[in-house]
Amino acid sequence: MLNLLIGAVIKGLLQGEQKYVVRGATLKCSLGTDPGVLNLPNSHGVYIKKKPVMTVADCTPDNIGCFGFCQAKMGGVLDHIAGWSRTGSSSIAVQTNPLLKGLLEFGADQLNAITASQAVCTPSLCGKWSGGKEDLLINNEQALLSKSTLTCSMGGTITIEHVGQD
Image (cartoon, rainbow, N blue to C red; front, top):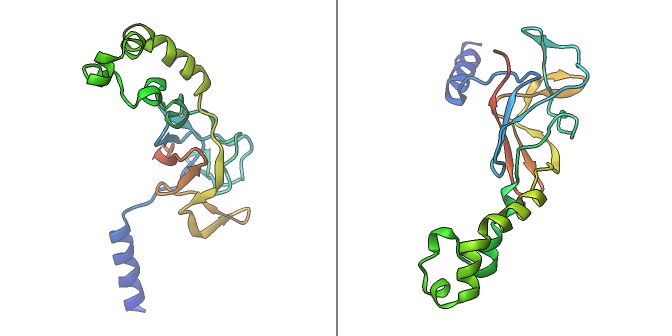
């Protein structure tokens, strides 16, 4: 029995403290430009500090909104045109090609504005959150923990920045 207790303590120390995630938690997508907020339209009936606890199944558009602009969608129009960016404006390819030089000097902001309007983040989530609390089920789903992650089909990884308890 003592060995089990010591093992549990060591496991907890090595993994670091994980907190439960509640409504209002702050999220981050590795490909988004802005933070997001985790929402829960209807509570599961379990609360911490008067806030509903989230589960690994809380991964729908009702729960997770926009992260600003999606860098996977944006990609930088100019980068795709010639394989260069503004910082590479002194490159030989730009200096010797008047079209590319003109595009860089006069059209970058306009092209990026057009791209940005088409690059608004609309998360396309792949499955449930990973890394939930296996031994705490709420409505038959694992409770969501601060270490949990979620994948977007655009290639982004969504993480929990602040659990929302404060």
